[in-house]
Length: 499
Image 1 (tube, rainbow, N blue to C red):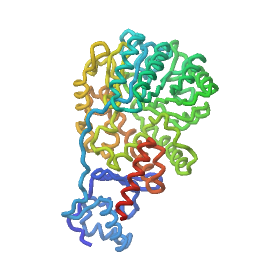
Image 2: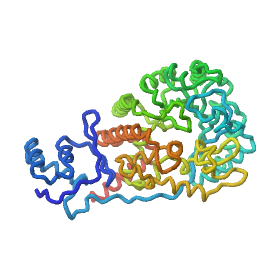
Image 3: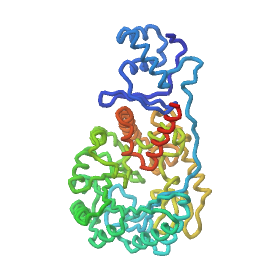
Image 4: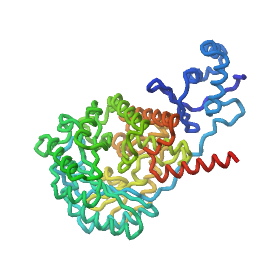
């Protein structure tokens, strides 16, 4: 074995649950490796140092070291001079796709005052307004046109508190279903609510229309009441629980909880278990988006949630490996671990380019936001920032400005991310967070880097274990059509090569 002129790929490795995970960013491949392989890679630029190699050979034996080098070469992790084993996958940005998600702020009014919310006194201090029925119809027509060839689209009703303008919500549902059905498309509605004193008739209407109900509840009463308060400063947990009980008794088929993660969300396991005890199995964990609320610094130190995130994710992995859960949870898939796993799956298969926009924050790509007044933004969280306004339903949609927004938000422009091992997974995080933190789309919110890297590690570990144990289990993270097409073509390619 010649150990001259060896090159090591752009790699990152870490240990989790007594296994070592290796990420090769040159090829974007993921492996579980043995201790001997990890020790060889630890040599780094000393991999040609005879004394260092001798120490490894003494520890493991000459034949084992030779075999480990061979395995690393086959992985594309090391290459001998003159070989092209380390070639980088093609990168590049895809064109701006058609939108398949619209966040519709049907009102700026709210009956609560949450510590991390942008709508304390109206959006950014502007007078709160209700969306009119005329504006709502225009929004549906606009979204249908922008959805292009997309077969499946989603509308999220939010605000403010959308239950305060429920007549417009019902109009959007009925009008939207008719318009999209006539175009041969499927439209799914999600009602994002604080759950504060929702009426039974409202819940009955949502159930009858097949709407997904997303209720905001931050886990245990003491944490929830700290952040989600009524206008008089009192806690709202009891009222929200009443809504959840009514929705559950109504047998609302699609019920989920949104839990906002802050630096005080240390006991995530307790929070999730509490929510599940209320009858909600689908819990969406969302890191808080900082919108000029300096009072609490609530986006900092999210990595304090780390142990709990690992514990919950390992429990999820155990359920998947034992097939004690089912993929039917797909009605909402916004948990960041699941999102990262799906992205890793697609990139390792070359289904999307390595440096593609795909997988980055959806603002301006698959998602658009419309305010109660009819203004259009890359997402609703940009509302109130005129430099990111993309026109309005009355004056027209500025497509050129959208293209400029997406060009500025390109992952390759984020200089702080270029040397980060997680750059092809995290892709810089939430764009609205970046603007709040740095005033720019190109500098990410560093407060959340540690948290995002932890989630990336968890996702890589789960991906590697499933790849080793049973790749068919990726059906828990990948939309059925996409997953089964990939399996079909893998079998086809195998048969072709075997002939």
